[in-house]
Image (cartoon, rainbow, N blue to C red; front, side, top):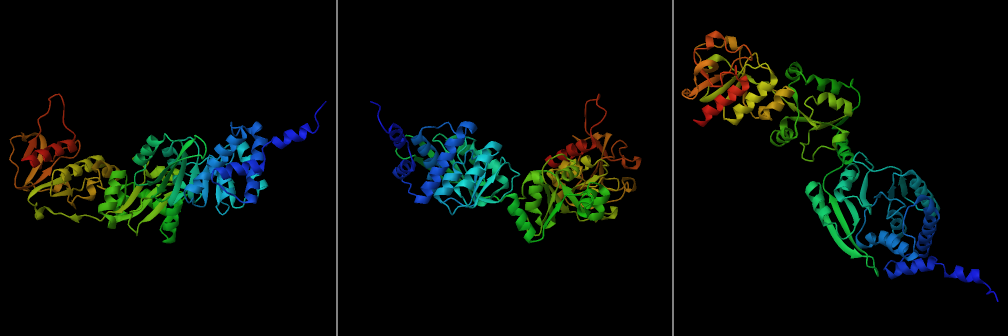
Length: 487
């Protein structure tokens, strides 16, 4: 005889909202009736659309509740999660949607780059009635600048890669929350090494999904550095930010003039390139630093800039025109006060004074670097000399131009023959046996032309292979400075 009510009996055995609530409560998660109803509706939506969208490979009811919903909610029970919270790579909405249901006061942003899943997320947010929940249909990269107080992710991406992604959006003192498996120690160490000073490991909490064998770790980093949007707000509050998008902008046109010696001399300001040089300038000469110059690709300026400094944020193509050294790193605008004048009747201080007649700015920078390195008292820039703050000279000097005592002098042709000068010439006395005066001016010749005839009486030479015609003038000066300094 055929049994009656078979369909009704089978249907009663299907899991329902009560079974979902029981599994959550067994895991220590207690929700309101409305919250259970929302989570059950979410579960049904996920089951309904999963076949088409392949959002999860977990199909068993208990596994879905434990591995998806319980696992998503547990971080909120282990630590206070910040708001707004950005769920990166949320996929079908986890952990963001279960967290939002369990902690309705939290503002949640669901970030997902795959369009078909974005459509599912928008449907879920609408049908579940989730307020203060936004779907962001894009992948998160460093230039993403939506301000958030925290991020959370259960994706498999390495921690340091995610920390790089969120540089543009996570606020200073914001939290980066990672739901990881137990074997993530190497990831944590790599992130600490790479982002030392920018992020601090706040918590590393091992836990397990209750009544299962699934071990987890909740890894939380606190951000110490400030993102682009936050620094922009600070600079704007003091009216120190200028965002420049047009090459016709007056400030930008003025900056371009700093690429020439004439512009540097007239404006008494110069551009500095090179991260090490810039750091030294900011640390040692804050009173001379005028503006930090960068594009959005560089991120924000460091937090230790002098309070009076401006920030010029340029469009990438405009910045590239200023970065003639090709460093692809921020530039610094600094004051370049005109050096005092030196006259032959002033003579020389004890020690070595380097006379610079070089017309090539790289040679000027190189010889100034050598002068500072070997303890020369001062550097006199003769009338032929290229500007010491020309970008090429500045870079060649390694920042030594900022520390050198610079003076300006007459043309090399106007130097009197009776000055205590030591010239560099291939016909001079071997430098190895030469006795340097107590106070003198070291005088290399102009590139190519060499020394004027009236200054060739007291010269030294550096022995080289006879097959080589001569040394680079700046190189010869460096060797002479070393030979003087070592004695």
